[in-house]
Length: 96
Image (tube, rainbow, N blue to C red; front, side, top):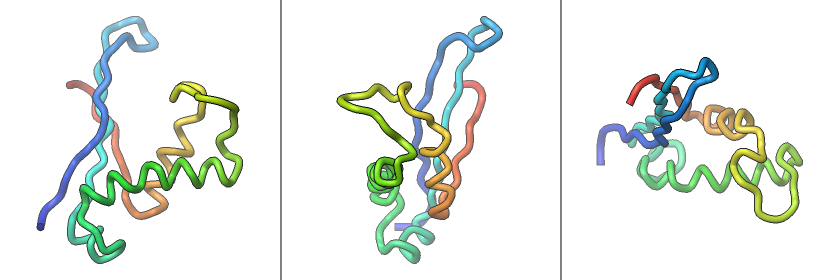
């Protein structure tokens, strides 16, 4: 497999200014990079990296809590920083 893949959520709602807002978090991974770096294709790497990041945040104590927590209960920045540290940056795009 060659080329790149893009995955990420799209959200719509109301911005801090009270106006409607739509944003997409784009995580682009190149198959050649993920194959060379981790031995797997990009879609597999994108799927696998998220639980690895969460486990690292829990193990290091950067995320804490008891029971089942919603995504809003933890700081998103450490979660978003780690894929970049692993060599795969993300970006945020305004609009749908």
